[in-house]
Image (tube, rainbow, N blue to C red; front, side, top):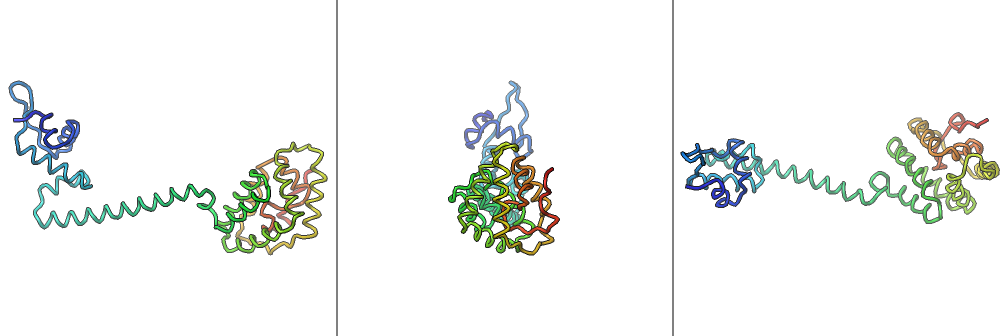
Length: 254
């Protein structure tokens, strides 16, 4: 006869596992003998090894008791079902791993590759990260709501970035995010932005599905200085090609 420790050692499990199997009703728990110990026989070793084998194979503990008492046909059918369930879970885990690996790609998880390339181009041109990230958020909203408009907006923004004058303005705007709202440079800079827009900005037709109010709200809340600057210049939100009607323009501050 074996103690619980000896039983566990013969099956290659822990005493805690044996007690857990007792609790689940998978392994019969013998009565205490006269000395107060529970003693196990060879049959208990066989049962425990079978339980451990099934558990190690991935069989859910809730199904093990059925398999222990199933006939050959029922056993084969149950194992096939369990295998199918495990395959589905493995596929789900693969999808999760794929999504987790995509997190390392940063913006690529949320944006079309062409938009990510645009943002990288802005970084390479010296646009400050704070403005790039603000624009990224606007693109995320746009891509979710009006993905069909993205190619048009991208073409307009890339065309703007081909203009050295715009690049200089956009670079300065990214630095201006750190200026105080009362900075004396703001009025002159706002005039430069307005002049560039007047010369170059060909406004696309507005898209009623575009989340313009949400975009504007995000931009306006990002920085008091940017809010003051855009209001003074009558300019649009960071993807400067985003559509807007006349009523969508930023209101001028008094």
